[in-house]
Image 1 (cartoon, rainbow, N blue to C red):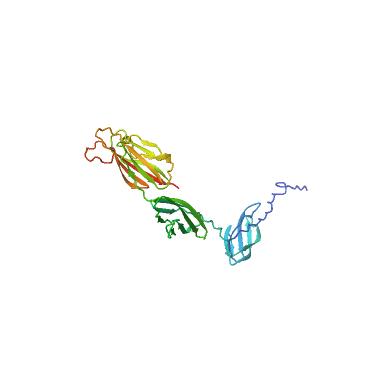
Image 2 (tube, rainbow, N blue to C red; image 1 turned 135 degrees about the vertical axis):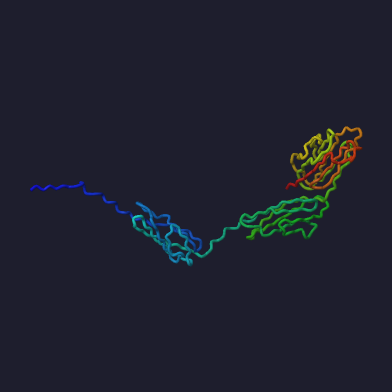
Length: 337
């Protein structure tokens, strides 16, 4: 009898899958703040799959265990403790690692204090000066102020206010070296000194002139820039002219009756006049009226702002003349350091 052996499918059957490679557990020991640490599973890996889960154990920690990838822990006291991380991959294999972490109850030293920076601004109206603190402290606040106004005529020329006002008693222009000392909330201090020019009230004078113009002398009490604004006008004369005749020679305009109201004229190119300067402002009448009378100016105000009301003398018999509104000029002095 003939027996036949028949094989089905050939070969040795399907190739079995490779053995699973176990995961590797690992983490970075964190830098702790006093007794508190934050642990992160940042180094674990699985070469042939994924980390499916993890489990932490924290010796003397709260919480004592966790399954989170990132976990904040507070330890009970200063010391060195063991932290264990166990990871499981997607095929069920596990690995664990234990590391020690040291915590301290001592608070880290605070950053070094940054000293304050002292500074101030000021404005003076005659003998009275107002001082405004402009100091700064980048890592805190100003806790105390000490002002010295350097007035040799007074024994009370000091202040602890942030923004004080002080009145001098000198009878002529005088410079005072004002000092501000500031102390911050950590006890550090800084000092700044500025020279302040102070002058007693000046008398503004407007001369009669020569019958065609009238000059006014304005005393500039501090180093200051000067502007003149045409505040208003109500005139028809052709040639009402404004000039500066001292300490510089400059024509501001030649026909004020046609100048735009509100125009601001910068005097001396914006360069400051020195304290004690006598600024002479001269206004000339452009009137050709045969019956014209001498022009005149009425002045109000005082340093640092004057108003000049000019009458050009035209048509003096008209009702309300002289009305002193042909040109209305505002002279402003702005103090500079």
